[in-house]
Image (tube, rainbow, N blue to C red; front, side, top):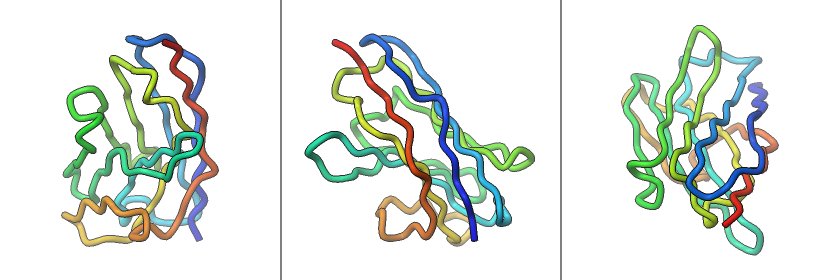
Amino acid sequence: QVQLIESGGGLVQAGDSLGVSCQASGGTFRTYAMGWFRQAPGKEREFVATISRSGNTLYANSVKGRFTISRDNAKNTVYLQMNSLKHEDTAVYYCAADPALPWATPSRDVDYDYWGRGTQVTVSS
Protein backbone atom coordinates (compact mmCIF):
# COMPACT_ATOMS: atom_id res chain seq x y z
CA GLN A 1 0.00 0.00 0.00
CA VAL A 2 1.40 3.37 -1.06
CA GLN A 3 0.79 6.53 0.94
CA LEU A 4 1.14 9.89 -0.78
CA ILE A 5 1.38 13.22 0.98
CA GLU A 6 1.37 16.48 -0.94
CA SER A 7 2.86 19.71 0.33
CA GLY A 8 3.80 23.16 -0.85
CA GLY A 9 0.47 24.65 -1.83
CA GLY A 10 -0.46 28.20 -0.97
CA LEU A 11 -1.72 31.58 -2.08
CA VAL A 12 0.16 33.40 -4.82
CA GLN A 13 -0.50 36.15 -7.32
CA ALA A 14 -0.98 35.70 -11.03
CA GLY A 15 2.38 35.47 -12.76
CA ASP A 16 4.12 34.03 -9.71
CA SER A 17 5.77 30.64 -9.40
CA LEU A 18 5.07 27.88 -6.91
CA GLY A 19 6.36 24.37 -6.38
CA VAL A 20 4.44 21.48 -4.88
CA SER A 21 5.83 18.12 -3.92
CA CYS A 22 4.53 14.67 -3.08
CA GLN A 23 6.27 12.28 -0.72
CA ALA A 24 5.58 8.59 -1.18
CA SER A 25 5.96 5.82 1.36
CA GLY A 26 4.97 2.19 1.73
CA GLY A 27 5.92 1.05 -1.75
CA THR A 28 8.76 0.91 -4.26
CA PHE A 29 8.59 4.43 -5.64
CA ARG A 30 10.66 3.78 -8.75
CA THR A 31 8.14 1.19 -9.96
CA TYR A 32 5.34 3.75 -10.26
CA ALA A 33 4.44 6.33 -12.84
CA MET A 34 3.57 9.48 -10.92
CA GLY A 35 0.94 11.96 -11.92
CA TRP A 36 -0.49 15.27 -10.87
CA PHE A 37 -4.17 16.07 -11.21
CA ARG A 38 -6.21 19.04 -10.05
CA GLN A 39 -9.79 19.83 -9.21
CA ALA A 40 -11.24 23.32 -9.16
CA PRO A 41 -14.48 24.16 -7.33
CA GLY A 42 -17.47 22.95 -9.29
CA LYS A 43 -15.34 21.18 -11.87
CA GLU A 44 -14.24 17.62 -12.47
CA ARG A 45 -10.76 16.45 -11.64
CA GLU A 46 -8.41 16.94 -14.57
CA PHE A 47 -5.01 15.70 -15.63
CA VAL A 48 -2.06 18.07 -15.22
CA ALA A 49 1.16 16.12 -15.78
CA THR A 50 2.73 12.71 -15.44
CA ILE A 51 6.22 11.26 -15.36
CA SER A 52 6.97 7.67 -16.22
CA ARG A 53 9.22 5.28 -14.40
CA SER A 54 11.89 6.03 -17.00
CA GLY A 55 11.46 9.81 -16.83
CA ASN A 56 9.21 10.43 -19.83
CA THR A 57 6.81 13.30 -19.24
CA LEU A 58 3.40 14.31 -20.53
CA TYR A 59 1.52 17.54 -19.87
CA ALA A 60 -1.96 18.86 -20.31
CA ASN A 61 -2.10 21.49 -23.04
CA SER A 62 -3.26 24.07 -20.51
CA VAL A 63 -0.01 23.84 -18.53
CA LYS A 64 2.51 22.90 -21.23
CA GLY A 65 5.46 25.28 -21.20
CA ARG A 66 4.58 26.61 -17.74
CA PHE A 67 4.67 23.53 -15.48
CA THR A 68 7.47 21.02 -15.02
CA ILE A 69 7.13 17.62 -13.41
CA SER A 70 10.16 15.81 -12.04
CA ARG A 71 10.95 12.96 -9.71
CA ASP A 72 13.71 12.00 -7.32
CA ASN A 73 13.64 8.25 -6.79
CA ALA A 74 16.23 8.47 -4.00
CA LYS A 75 13.86 10.72 -2.04
CA ASN A 76 10.63 8.97 -3.09
CA THR A 77 9.35 12.35 -4.17
CA VAL A 78 7.65 13.82 -7.23
CA TYR A 79 7.61 17.55 -7.84
CA LEU A 80 5.51 19.97 -9.84
CA GLN A 81 7.08 23.34 -10.54
CA MET A 82 4.47 25.84 -11.66
CA ASN A 83 5.51 29.06 -13.36
CA SER A 84 3.51 31.95 -14.82
CA LEU A 85 0.55 30.94 -12.73
CA LYS A 86 -2.92 32.03 -13.81
CA HIS A 87 -6.11 32.47 -11.83
CA GLU A 88 -7.53 29.45 -13.63
CA ASP A 89 -4.77 27.28 -12.14
CA THR A 90 -6.53 27.63 -8.79
CA ALA A 91 -7.44 24.14 -7.60
CA VAL A 92 -6.66 21.35 -5.19
CA TYR A 93 -3.67 19.52 -6.60
CA TYR A 94 -3.43 15.77 -6.11
CA CYS A 95 -0.57 13.41 -6.79
CA ALA A 96 -1.19 9.83 -7.77
CA ALA A 97 0.79 6.64 -8.35
CA ASP A 98 0.28 4.04 -11.08
CA PRO A 99 2.23 0.75 -11.25
CA ALA A 100 2.65 1.22 -15.02
CA LEU A 101 5.08 -0.08 -17.58
CA PRO A 102 8.45 1.74 -17.53
CA TRP A 103 7.75 4.04 -20.48
CA ALA A 104 4.05 4.66 -19.82
CA THR A 105 2.72 8.16 -19.16
CA PRO A 106 -0.87 7.57 -18.04
CA SER A 107 -3.16 10.58 -18.19
CA ARG A 108 -6.50 9.13 -17.05
CA ASP A 109 -7.33 9.24 -13.36
CA VAL A 110 -8.74 5.70 -13.58
CA ASP A 111 -5.22 4.46 -14.39
CA TYR A 112 -3.93 5.44 -10.96
CA ASP A 113 -4.19 3.17 -7.95
CA TYR A 114 -3.07 5.48 -5.15
CA TRP A 115 -3.92 9.08 -4.38
CA GLY A 116 -2.87 11.75 -1.95
CA ARG A 117 -5.30 14.01 -0.13
CA GLY A 118 -4.32 17.09 -2.09
CA THR A 119 -2.86 20.52 -1.50
CA GLN A 120 -4.64 23.79 -2.23
CA VAL A 121 -3.15 26.20 -4.75
CA THR A 122 -4.85 29.56 -5.00
CA VAL A 123 -3.83 32.14 -7.60
CA SER A 124 -5.22 35.61 -7.11
CA SER A 125 -5.86 37.67 -10.21
